[in-house]
Image 1 (cartoon, rainbow, N blue to C red):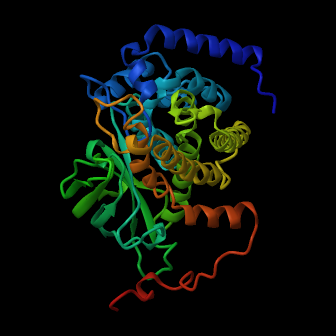
Image 2 (image 1 turned 120 degrees about the vertical axis):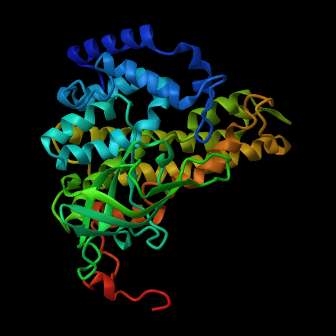
Length: 414
């Protein structure tokens, strides 16, 4: 690939840069620049409110989700222009992460399966940040197996009645809508008999319970459904074809998370340049430099692997299984970097208060949040299987329950 801007791309970049320079919330730039995975706080301001205000300002000027069609709240930009926008948005893009599930996963699924009227009604406010969406997939009994879900949807006239539980749902506590995968026919094998819907998170019978995490935040939630009524017009795809619908969501999820996930490398590189060890600056230590070099190579590999996916998108192709590579590498990388940073800090590594030195607390918060990155969007083990089977073409695992009706699969206590 040629990574130099074409004249048209250079013009687009200049236009994006000028708009951002004139409209970005620069009063938060310093704090955004210093924030890391696991700690995004703004002094005297609510992060969600600031993010919504920035997203709405972008939407009013046509910059909200540049690559979406104009009729759905986008700009009709090319995949390459999308990358240019993300590069120019820089640190302010951290505010956009609050909308990544809706815009990166739910939106593409709605575009593929919702009716035209529904797309024109629901997508523009999703793009503008006025309405936030979540993804209701994982369940306590399913573990990493999305197809092992037990949330039931039973037909009742023109409606469906939903009962069950989801878990680890990011942002459910502040979401307005969600896409929901359910089991509609337990007599079919587990990957069949599934059906996808979208629903209002304020529907009667929906209960959201935030989960307290090790880092003190509550980004994830348990969501309970008790006789929740969803009209059939909010079904996405055919009845019992929910697995194929979910693949659209999952492929976009891996691309969105893998392409935008922080690695911690910029933070550790800057930190090593300012930290003093017993025998001098950390950056002069051979062992430290070796670590930094290794991570620099991985960071570069992630960048250009993401560009390969973008190139495929520019040709009209659907995001593929290779996007699992980015998420797998970045997830473990940020955990390793945070751990190493604490080792370099020594006794200072126990400090995490906001009144401590600037670096104290950054890597602690990063480390406490990092295990979640290795679970959300597919565990390391699931991603390795996807890469092995669908990228490298290796033989698949033996799956003894593959063609067994779901209600005949043995479970504990049965």
